[in-house]
Length: 116
Ligand SMILES: [Zn+2]
Image (cartoon, rainbow, N blue to C red; front, top):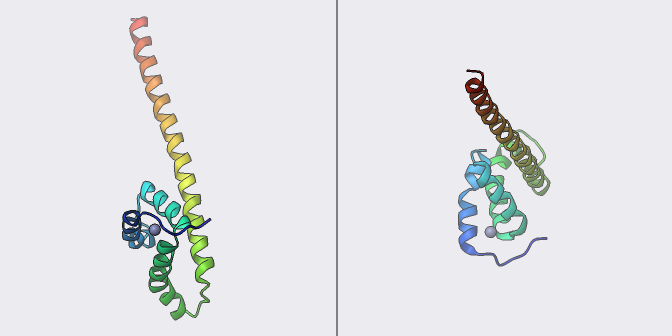
């Protein structure tokens, strides 16, 4: 699944998102690009593992928790994927509600004039 030799500009951009990802501050669009890229790019995965280790690993080690870096990261990416899917669905629902609301408004507006 993973391949080496991606566009390095992409990698730079993705790697600049790592702190934001770990802090949970990426936008939906950024998170989508981030997880998709990490799954296919070893270089950025490695970079992410290092950052994660520095960020979370130390806290966990201090608390005496066992660190399974690879499994942890995989779970985190899966969580993000789930969240993205959830948010994407949520957005479609919001969009549907908004379109319906506009339709109802237009219908009311027309009815108002017909009754008048
Ligand atoms: Zn990359």
